[in-house]
Length: 324
Image (tube, rainbow, N blue to C red; front, side):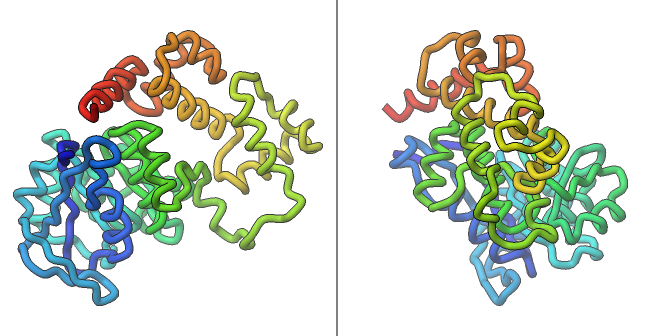
């Protein structure tokens, strides 16, 4: 098998978040082509090629310079530990050039500050660690900073809330590039959650652990198994003996989003899987997942994934044919 997937540039610079770098490298840098037919071609790039000391006294070798990063399909920006300082100009220039060429730019945790200094967050939604979100919003007022989201993908600018959220975002990228089944299989291999639907709200001032009599986890399982059914706040609340208002509050505490938003994401994931493994029509897939109609399915895919369901199916079939 060959690594003939997207070109990825892992950016390394002095003081970059070592955990950010190492965990995401596990997904993009390790060769999984034998399992998935192809995989990413990943290079480590630095302003000055050679040994680069990240934070925590971790040193990585960067054989390539920023010219290689500029030509990549996806650039990974680990955390920036000097939030108040402007990053090196060559780094910002490389990011701007890559973005203008159409590359995806993905930051992890405080790496969003580098994107902000490069002007890539202007008029876009973005996130970072909840504790640093107010500063990000203050320094870059043209950005719309959402401290609740685990990750955000806004027109090719991808930001993750914290170190572990970088893994969630990396799996989101794999899901877009290689399909929902590939992302789920990789998550199982790495003993990760295939899709953590919650937001940062679940980590801010919330006691660790889950109450043993909390009925919401069972409700989430029921909703996943009945995606084709209409679910109102009233009907869902009746299942767990809560008022709609109480349910909405508890649901947001557990998942970081509203029941409607959570259900939308689950329906899109289910539709992705059906597009990958079946030849069912768009109408039938829309019915089975509760999306309703082929028109709704197209609109939802464009909003959530940026492509049409037909294009998603075609791309997945093309990847599968290359495996054979």
